[in-house]
Image (cartoon, rainbow, N blue to C red; front, side, top):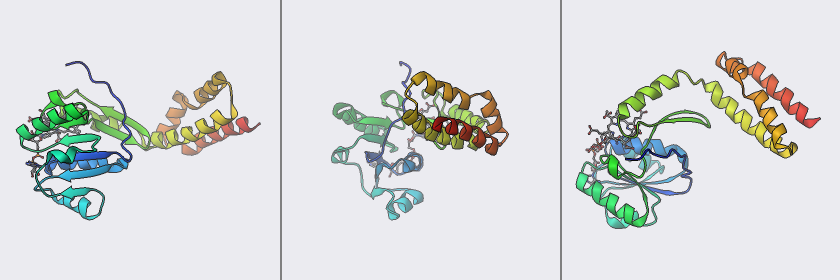
Length: 213
Ligand SMILES: C[C@@]1(CC(=O)O)c2cc3[nH]c(cc4nc(cc5[nH]c(cc(n2)[C@H]1CCC(=O)O)[C@@](C)(CC(=O)O)[C@@H]5CCC(=O)O)C(CC(=O)O)=C4CCC(=O)O)c(CCC(=O)O)c3CC(=O)O
Ligand SMILES: NC(=O)C1=CN([C@@H]2O[C@H](COP(=O)(O)OP(=O)(O)OC[C@H]3O[C@@H](n4cnc5c(N)ncnc54)[C@H](O)[C@@H]3O)[C@@H](O)[C@H]2O)C=CC1
């Protein structure tokens, strides 16, 4: 198999279907909850958590077997039943219809895999082993979690604000780049790792005020 192309997908307002309601389906749903996507689960039986998310109105739950019409208007599908024939049939229909598919028991027929993720606000590290060892992906996540402080996420948000201001005030791209180099370097990352948020804020404020001159 060719290597997989890593990408980040905007799921806001899109329709996602999860077929199956067991442990694996629950993990996929839990993962999706934060992304503003319309989540529909179809399964005769569902876990307690899936049931609860349905009752809270966070997702739609249909307690019945999958029907082909469930795929109408769907952007992304997780075939997460314990019936491999059904998961394969769903994969075939999705291929025909051009719907993005993840079949939890059939890596070869997936359009995409779900990675292990370390998130610090908008700073995201996604890990894949291209299906070779999900457990290894999880282990890597646990290792990286210890290396990436919360402060990095906070700082990336702040840099986002500076970036907007810089785009509005500095026309020259080289000048903008010079500003970002002042704000993203080993010294600043060191301060963030030591938890010296105040010092970092001062640096940023100096840079912003130089913009206003
Ligand atoms: C291809 C892929 C498709 C997909 O699901 O997207 C896939 C497939 C399969 N996983 C299986 C088993 C396990 N999966 C996990 C865990 C995770 N699996 C995830 C992703 C992926 N799993 C995709 C590839 C990701 C990559 O590129 O590496 C993670 C990262 C994301 C998530 O699911 O949210 C999440 C960790 C999240 C975290 O903790 O950070 C564990 C460990 C555990 O439960 O903790 C086990 C048991 C141990 C083991 O097998 O390693 C089996 C059954 C194998 C069998 O029958 O023996 C299949 C099917 C097969 O391989 O045939
Ligand atoms: N990709 C991954 O991360 C992993 C994948 N797996 C694979 O995932 C599969 C599912 O595992 P679990 O969730 O633990 O199984 P499970 O037995 O807990 O759940 C299966 C679910 O499928 C539903 N289902 C069965 N027939 C259906 C139909 N016709 N229409 C709709 N829903 C239907 C059942 O009601 C049940 O909710 C396993 O067969 C295994 O091969 C297992 C571990 C991790």
